[in-house]
Amino acid sequence: MKPARTLAAALAGETVVLDGGLSNQLMAQGCDLSDDLWSARLLADGPEQIEAAHTAYVRAGARVLITSSYQATYEGFARRGVTRREAAGLLAGSVELARRAGEAAEHEVWVAASVGPYGAMLADGSEYRGRYGLSVRELERFHRPRIEALAAAGPDVLALETVPDTDEAEALLRAAEDPGVPVWLSYSIAGERTRAGQPLTEAFALAAGAGQVIAVGINCCEPADADRAVEIAASVTGKPVVVYPNSGEGWDAGKRHWRGDATFDPARVAAWRSAGARLVGGCCRVGPAEIARLGAAVAALRDI
Image 1 (cartoon, rainbow, N blue to C red):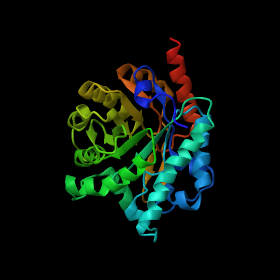
Image 2: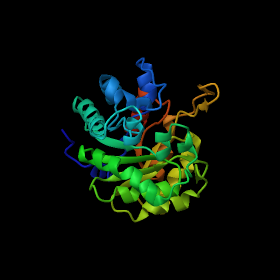
Image 3: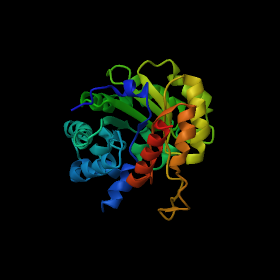
């Protein structure tokens, strides 16, 4: 059952807590994600694990669940022999699994259907570089069928997330115009620029006049980079800001493991909220325990 309020209505008066990284929770449950499809493989091979991961975040207090469709594409599934019709069913299933987990909650839970960048389908790390050599029109053609399939499944919002550059943001916004589902647009950044190097002022400006965009911001970035980015997003667009950074640890691609210390600090939420953030959560390596602490920090702000 969908929440009685729209997510946009909720954002008008409060700060809403998102979930954390889905992949790290799946790995904590013992799932093997060493696959080009990453967590999307479990839509076919282990949907109960995905629902369990969503449920862990609901229990931690998350009020928005992001689906497991980040790396789920018709092209990626086709490489595994999955037909287009079967792939459409798996995409719809990602929304259903999140919805089912949310229905068990005592609080309102909205479902955000994840639409990851083109580079996620390539599974070569290019989503952190952008600039794939494709035109905006070609990127729009790639994204449109998946967006339409996810929208038809009835999510509360489409999460156009981890976007590395403005060309892809433009393509995603074009592809998301027709389905009639609100969206948020979040870039992956380094400092005050997109991963492809464009200034965030230019990147966020793309969403300023887009009526279907209910929030704009950043995800899958260093926690320290999020602070200034929230300010820029709010000042450029006047829209609610969405922010969900990584844990702060670094990924060693050669040795295929995380290194360094986590710097994700729920105490940052006070500054984020003051600057305009209304959707707050975590991305890679941020688990249910951190989301519970983030929720407590948000609740404490309401009491001030």
